[in-house]
Amino acid sequence: MELQLLNTLRDHNPIVFNIANFVTVQDVANGLNALGASPIMSAEVQEAETMVQIAGAVCINLGTLTTTQIDQMRVVGKLANQYHKPVVLDPVAVGAVPYRKEVALGLLSDFQVDVIRGNAGEIAALAGMDWQAKGIDAGSGQGDLVEIAQACAQQFQCCVILSGPTDVITDGQRVVKVANGTPLFQRHVGSGDLLSSIVAAFTAVSSTDVYQAAQVACLVLAGAGELVASQLTADRPATFAIDLIDRLSLVTVSEIQTIAKVD
Ligand SMILES: Nc1ncnc2c1ncn2[C@@H]1O[C@H](COP(=O)(O)OP(=O)(O)OP(=O)(O)O)[C@@H](O)[C@H]1O
Ligand SMILES: Cc1ncsc1CCO
Ligand SMILES: [Mg+2]
Image (cartoon, rainbow, N blue to C red; front, side, top):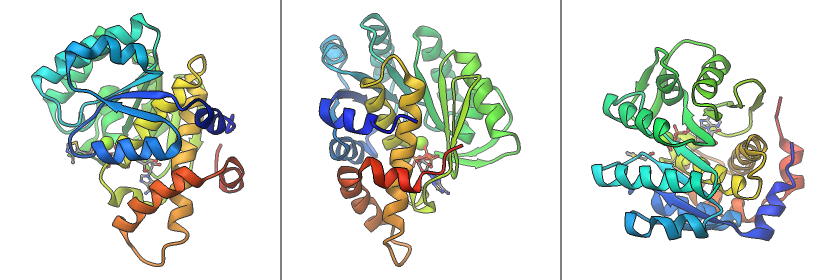
């Protein structure tokens, strides 16, 4: 894996344009900033073209969608395709809310996305497979996570990250698994939103190889979280979230290489 992309990202400080949700917007902005990217959030369609032009990549998060925002998402996605800017989609809760799934499928037919990043419940729903998703969480289901991720990637002709205790990254054929992380990620709302935006940041510096960008993003975030957890003496979700921001700014390629569990 090309972990040197972390240094490339810090050298280039790419602008990442996020259509964020209002729950986790500041965590996402601070996480991107700490890592070495330059976040910008916008909810206004009038400025969509400028946003896409100045950005290195776009992350579209369905977390707190409204009818107005869906229109903005459609315009932004089409502009990103036109300007050849990578697009990451975070299909928050599409496994639990049929309306969201309908919206996500509509967007996926209106423009091409480069990466879909979701948990098992979300990716299974987009792939048309049975799964008991629970709100924004993965929920419980039965099935081969690799097959589910591959089916989703093939259906939408893009990379898919199915995140969880092990992140599964696939372009529809090839598969890489990242087993780093900590259960503390699940105790902090918005870990997934941050991952999706970090994926966008890496695609901004590796737009010709978004599959690599997706892998590096998963390993850097999960690795940073694992390093934080290894220093915490108790189950402290709030401390974890704060320390994660610090660690994203300090972590080095060699620290991550030392703990990487990739296959
Ligand atoms: N049990 C776990 N052990 C290790 N790492 C985990 C675990 N659960 C999640 N992660 C990590 O947490 C990050 C977010 O993935 P997750 O699948 O929880 O997203 P999500 O469900 O969309 O989260 P959110 O709704 O809070 O944004 C990923 O980096 C993933 O590797
Ligand atoms: C809790 C919550 N509700 C809508 S979005 C969100 C943050 C996780 O994506
Ligand atoms: Mg999520």
